[in-house]
Amino acid sequence: MLIGLMSDTHDNLPMIDKAVLKLNEANVELVLHAGDYVAPFAIPRLKELKSKLIGVFGNNDGDRELLKKRFSEHKNLEIHNNFAEITAEGSRIALLHGSDRELLQSLINGENYDFIVHGHTHSVETYRKGKTLVVNPGEVCGYLTGKATIVFLDVGKREAKIVGL
Image (cartoon, rainbow, N blue to C red; front, top):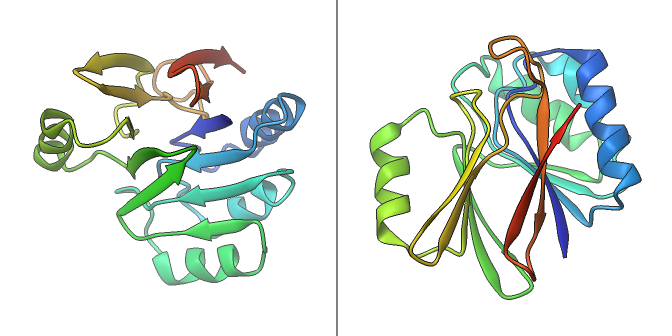
């Protein structure tokens, strides 16, 4: 199963559109968003995804009630609060923003998940801690690092591929 990973879109509509296009071109079966959409007006851009999107909130997501409402207007979009546990092809995936560093580190050290997906730092990285593959897809917005990225996660092969936008 191929899963698209994204985070930290921060209202950059042109980059959100590019990410959606790349995810659709790759025929991902699911997209996970690790938070920081920021404003509710960005959410309708995600409805163009051909797959389902599951997301969590980030520390810059202010109006959570309106964000929830915008998500609920699109059948392929699902929002959780600060954490989501997803099962894909028998693999357990933890999805969180990562602004609570202690919680993130505890999840990583626990090695109870096959994959941990987080954002917050805007820095793309993948590494293994025991059986767990930890992935930060970086930032879709490109504001802090100047590099807009997403990640393709191949659950079966347990591999992550960084893709520039």
